[in-house]
Image (cartoon, rainbow, N blue to C red; front, side, top):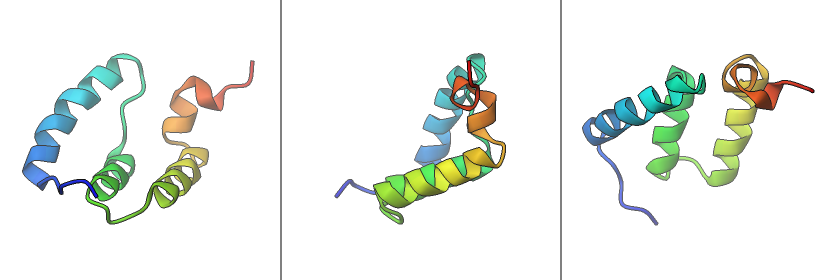
Length: 72
């Protein structure tokens, strides 16, 4: 079990990481950010995180903004 991360610590780290991801058009939206925070704090399992992330992605978030959503 991972040690829990405070909301403040998460926000500080996330801001920097998401800015880097935005450079590649892969920044996470608020829903994706919330899922990540919940996963890091063991509020949801890996399987739940992946399932919810992919469900949201199919509905137009990260999936469509990245090559994951493109068929070539």
